[in-house]
Image (cartoon, rainbow, N blue to C red; front, side, top):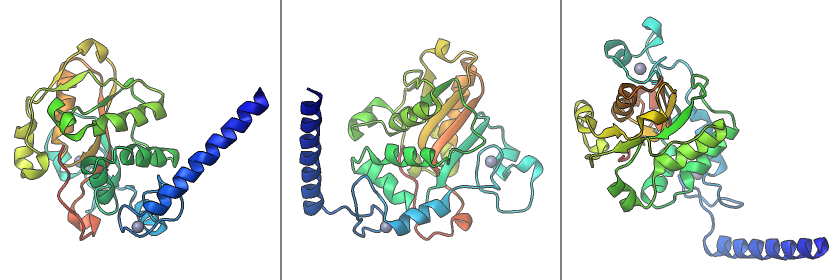
Length: 272
Ligand SMILES: [Zn+2]
Ligand SMILES: [Zn+2]
């Protein structure tokens, strides 16, 4: 019986290899960023050149101790950026893996707007396996995705923050609590608004549905891209008011000042 099972598994594997080879022939794999053909199998989203560009992009010190934005000037008080020096942040720390510049921009556009739901989780898993998790992130009691409005989930067909939160939660061996926070208002796309209006746009847009799930527990909020941090802050604020412990934020990418990115491809951040 074991021999038979092994034989049928081998036949199955051969068949799936043949199907894959056929698919590769009909739709040759290409780099999501530069669109050059990519040798080998999907998921291999980036060609070697774009992969090494991504590796060079990894966010590293000096970063703002609180919000994680790269610091350009000289040393500041407590290693904080101007924004974190001048205003209260509700989250204890926010970190991202890479800046929202090429080649991540192409990957995130495919992830959010082209229905390629596997791109974000696969990219995130790869970065976690390569030990890119920022040191500042402490293992939380619970992982909470920044929620989308149900209408946005219907429009997109999937919840991009939830898929990423599941990857982070599995990596940290912590539960993902996807029903704790609720987005109660269908907000305008943050990316279409000037910075000062983003805070107003998300004010009152979230509520904590099950405070008992997070009471006195530290929370790690997960999202795809952080821009000004207004959305993450609003979520952190309602969680703290509901009695949660400290709230950290982890995003796959974050926007950075153009002077730092040095990238002409720095585009408007994606919609929530
Ligand atoms: Zn490429
Ligand atoms: Zn900061």
